[in-house]
Amino acid sequence: MNIKKHIPNTITCCNLISGCIATFWAFEGDYQLALLFIVIGAVFDFFDGMSARLLGVSSPIGKELDSLADDVTFGFAPSAIVFSFLSSLTSHLSPLSFLAFIMAAFSALRLAKFNLDERQAMGFIGLPTPANALFWGSLIVGLGDSIAILPYAEYMILAGILISSWLLVSEIPMFALKFKTWGWQGNEVKYIFLLTCIPLLLLLNVSGLAAIIAWYVILSAINHHFSS
Image (cartoon, rainbow, N blue to C red; front, side):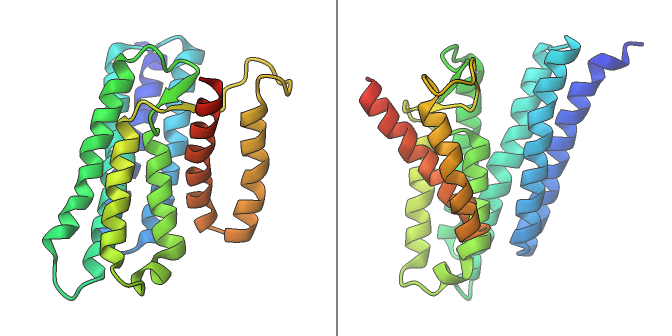
C-alpha cells in the first residue's frame, strides 16, 4: 500500500474539517474561534498542494477534493459568520441575513473557474477564496462591535457581500506571492505589499488582516491598470 499518495488528501480533509468546525462556531456566535479555524484551514490548504508536489502524487481526485474543502472553509464558513452577525443586528431573524450565503455560491463558482482557467499559474483572476474568507472573519472579529452601532449597518454589510461576490468571479488580475527571482525588479508590487502588511497588523491588530486584504485588491487593481 502506497501511503504517500494518501497524505495530501488527508491534509485536504483536515482543511474541510476545520471549515466545518469554523461554521459551527460561526452559528454559535463565537467569531474568534470561527476565524481561528478558518486560519487553520488555510494552513492545511497551503500544505496539501505542497505535499502533493513534493511527493509527486498529484491526482484529479485531489484537485476536486481540494475545491470542495475550500468552498466549505473559505465559502460556507465566512458566509455563516456574516449570516450570524447580520442576525445579531436585529431582534428577529431577518430574511436579509440569508443573503450572506450568496458568497458561498460565488466562492464555489470561483473555485470551479480556477480549476479550468490556465491563466492562473503565477497569479489569480479574481479574488482568491481564502482572502475573501479572511477579510470577513477578521472584519467581524476586529470591528464587529463598531459596525453594529452604525446606522444601516446591515445594508452596509449586504453591499459588502455583493462587492465580495463580484470580486470572486471578476476578471481583475491579482498577484500571487510567488517569486521566480528574489530581486526587486519584477517583484516591486509584491515587496511593497509585504512591507505595508507589517504596520497594518501592528496598528490595527485583527482588523489589520481585513485592511491587508482590501489593500491587496486595491494594489492589484492599480498594478493591472498601469501594466495594461
